[in-house]
Image (tube, rainbow, N blue to C red; front, side, top):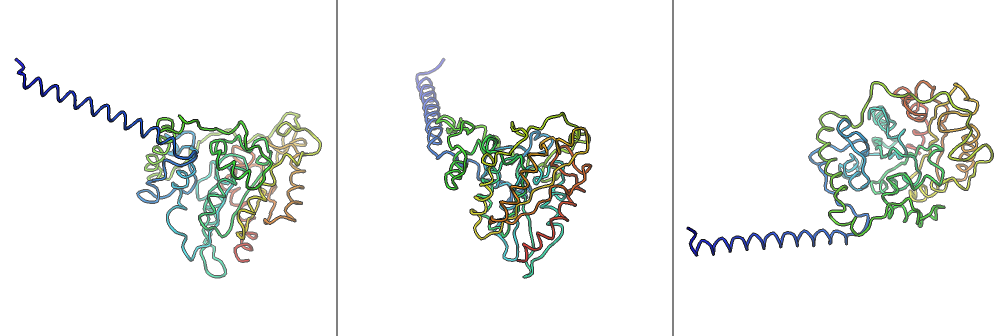
Length: 382
């Protein structure tokens, strides 16, 4: 039979547990809503195992099948850069630092890291005339948008590069696609500040921007971003032990060689390419942002088909009329620009492309590097 003393003790214990639970819930609610007061765009995942417990990745994280690729796509630039080898420490005094930005071709879809443009530069063990070791860092990201490249470049410049290499292709130029790429859409503050700072012909109030609500900025609202950042750390253990950062299927659908009789490009048809609807000014903004750091713009190689209706289209992306006008315009703009320019559009045989009209095989990537190397040597030693 429960004594009065035991009943009193149970009552006190129940009261204590209730108070702890109430205080815990209140504390979580306060923390949850205080998190929402952190400025939009602030990172919640800057702490990283990479470059401390784990080596830094050689490419920015990207992947749609994390269980096999040990990699995943996320939109927090601070978390992405914290996972990259460029964060390993201060820039060495004896290093000539090259940063590559660009799209999936530069990132290296279906290429091992050592077969990318950055990897081939590093394997060549180049040195400058004054004896500095040339080191390239792959900061490209798989989506086609010059504004996405500019956002990455702004962050990359904090790492003291000596040269920027910026491979581009026409698909990255139309104004209409600049903001809709997820990395841009999910970083509205970064994108809007660049649009305004460089007077870019883009809409800072575009509906493509993903604008977080007050609830989205709370701890609960940010749970997906926190989960992604955490998963990236966990997959880093598997990546570090295997070196795998993307899937390499034995069979894939090869780049298309035969086409319908279609001469359209992003809704435009044969005629004058609407140059005022191409974001060429973003290249100008990048050169201005880089200041005295030289920028090398490379019109990257594309597949030139000899299949059905190849007299109308070079490849899946480009009708001949649009791409020819783009090349002419870019060459003309480069004459008066603050960037160096090289056009390597037609240097790769069709059979050295893989699953896209811009993705190269390892042999195609080597041809690309060897063709670019004289220009690179000139810029390294100028």
